[in-house]
Image (cartoon, rainbow, N blue to C red; front, side):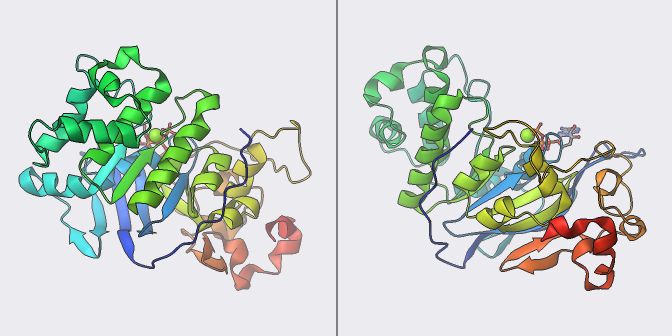
Length: 346
Ligand SMILES: Nc1ncnc2c1ncn2[C@@H]1O[C@H](COP(=O)(O)OP(=O)(O)OP(=O)(O)O)[C@@H](O)[C@H]1O
Ligand SMILES: [Mg+2]
């Protein structure tokens, strides 16, 4: 999808709304090798910032959002909201309180809305659950619908999901996330189920709401152009491991990890065909039940070296606020660059 250039957005405050430290999720481990869906992930989201999370299918993007939202129980790690540690086990009133601050928007607005209930009922539920409803909440529901651009609000409040288009349904999904007055929105591929022609409208709605309400946002996508349009910074995930993190323009225009370079070279281009910076990847996505001890991308990496198999590389600083988890950035292996043809890295 080709998108217009976004207007620059200042990354204002340096206060972190969310900090995720060494987050890990292993599914179905009992006695057998489990699926390591999220493998020690660390990042933060500043107040008023959009952090894009990109990676191919199965890389663990949704699992990260669901761990933060506490739809899944983390295996280990730490999550901090406004500097306060959120206990790994949350339930009852504490979970309800947490959800007031952190809300999710899902990929498929049809599956995530109850088909039996009119929109007004769906939007009044969170108001009631969080004890925010004034009277019957109808005026607040109307205001929510107007905030997401559904006019006349009273008409939309009476409709059921099947009477709405995909874009209208996703607007209702966004309104539902806003109902509790959250400060952090976890948007899991909120536009990928929508018609290409209306994706930009929904992305612009999210950016407007973020600006108007000072929201922080995790924006999950596998579309690099969408990530660049929406995000202040971008994090790249491969097989449950963060491999690159930095300012959106830098990470996407000048990626420094071979996996991000692969994603970029594989992304559809208006003038289809191979470009000079096209890089070939070999091998398969690793089995999440038996991850290699070293870099998870090593089996597919065109620049793989024996050292890459020895242990997981650390994140190396590769520019202002920009990090990549790759030994090609280790000064100790610099002489190898020429041999591996990794001149592409700079
Ligand atoms: N509830 C679950 N039980 C067992 N395994 C799971 C569960 N949820 C996810 N997984 C596994 O965890 C890995 C990561 O899945 P996840 O859904 O987080 O990926 P994703 O990056 O969101 O992919 P997509 O782009 O397709 O949405 C996959 O191997 C998946 O099969
Ligand atoms: Mg997903």
